[in-house]
Image (tube, rainbow, N blue to C red):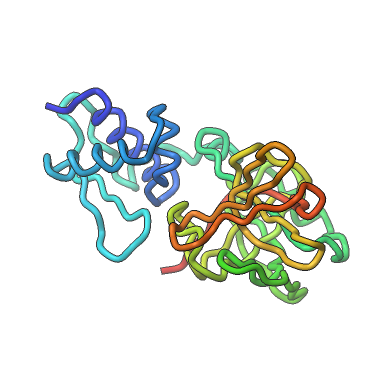
Length: 247
């Protein structure tokens, strides 16, 4: 028999997998279960593995697989029997993500491509080069590149795509080579993953932490240090709203 917290975590992971195709981050699981630290999540996952409910895939970040559900939970539907796709933006509201940004001296993107009807299956977004998820690099625009994005990932506002370079955000489920979908904006909640412009010259993808009069850009990898700046040195240029990955 599972404890209440083990049951809650298993159901949360299963729901996240069915909605997004990948397992939630430890930070998302901690917040969902209202725990104070990620160590509690580690213990719960280990217990679920030992009881045969979960399995971890080796050498992959955020690679949890639900083997079975408790007997009192209805079995998951096969893909062919799944209900119709949720309206655009539904997944984003239920499972908030976090970062978005890009060096802001590009010509405006024609909005017509992003004003597609709600029933449109996909939208072409401009690809604005590579964003560092390790040491900061400049975000370079390749005006000839676009990426096809499911319409359900997008809400209102202007969006772009950036390719991730580096491994500093792997514990947030963001891997080298992933494509992140960003919504342009100059503000973000504390703890959100953002694209930040540092000293008007560097652009990086990090978790934003405001500490008094300082701004911290926090990696999701223990091998990277948190960088702390004065408030006038960092400008938020957007927040993450989606992620695409090729296998």
